[in-house]
Length: 116
Image 1 (tube, rainbow, N blue to C red):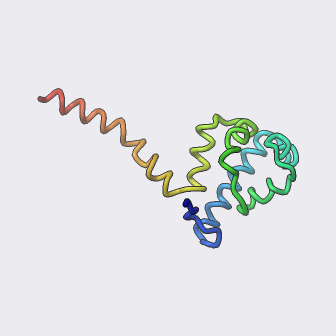
Image 2 (image 1 turned 90 degrees about the horizontal axis):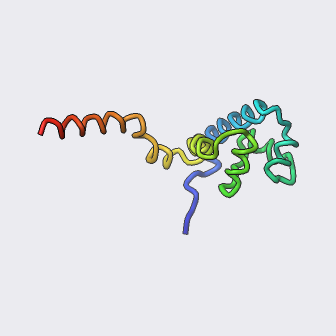
Image 3 (image 1 turned 120 degrees about the horizontal axis):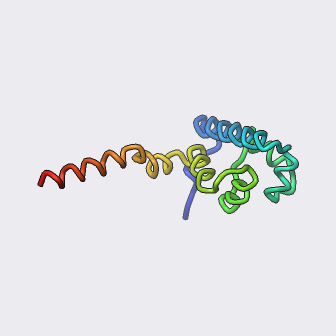
């Protein structure tokens, strides 16, 4: 059985959620949307859910990532990747920590094969 390793009471988790909320608010405002308008776009019954997210007291359900990305004007992949930094920093680090080093690694392997 899966259990979410992030506990809401944990100080680091709270800070990450607040940072995610701030980022979501900035995206919403950049699109010129009110909380009510965003709630309608993403299919949320109560706009107060948007307020809760923006203050770090909740998470966007994964099955809603696409609709949120579209509403906030971002490619879904970029949206989820950025959100993952806040919602699951351990997995984010595992998946993306080597991205900057990959080109250097490829160059090194080409250089090694040329010397053989």
